[in-house]
Image (cartoon, rainbow, N blue to C red; front, side, top):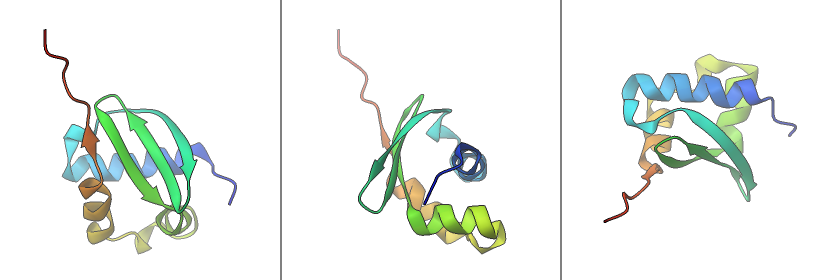
Length: 81
C-alpha cells in the first residue's frame, strides 16, 4: 500500500486525544506488518490494517484500535547526566 502521510497524521491526532504523551510526528519507516512512527517523545507502531481503514473509512478505526497503538508506544529514555 502506498502511504499518504496525512493518514499517519490523522491517526496521531486521534491517538493524542486519548494519550497526549505520544508527541508530534517526525518520521516513519516500513516494518513487516505496518509502520514504526517516530515522534518527538518516542516511537509507536501502526498496522497496515489500521492505516488502510483510516484511509478508506476512518469511522472503522475504533477507540480499541487506538488503545492498541498506544500500548505499542515506547517513550524515549532521558539520558542521565
